[in-house]
Image (cartoon, rainbow, N blue to C red; front, side, top):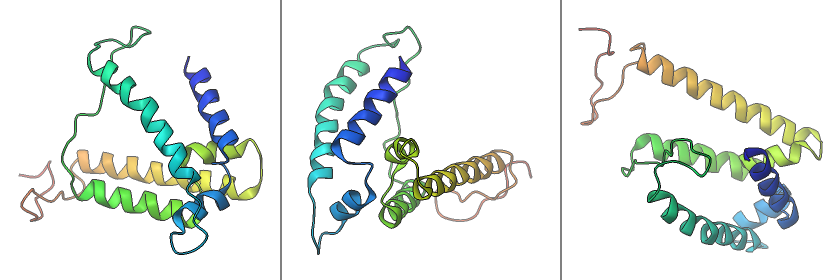
Length: 154
């Protein structure tokens, strides 16, 4: 089922032209030759996702019987803001974001491959930092902004 969903998603990205970095960068170029087509694709995705999330909120298991886990976070914090800036910065510099980058790997070329490698490296670094934070090796700021002692020290 996931394979079919991924193939459908990738096909939609290719057909809509969202695997072309120039098209994505044209959407981000508000002062130049702005191309609104990415916004139209995103709007269509939101229209499809909204009823699906409404239905999913009322269900316990998925259609395949697995446990359903929807996001519960509602707070905008520093991690969300920094992650958004890094994601958006990479998107603006490269013209790729994760879905089209993976779909573009099938087309070939060095640019999507470099982006994909950098994306996976960033994910690995994030996982490593998260693990170090959980193990108490990194000092985590308290909610009031002051640096707290690592979790394993008393």
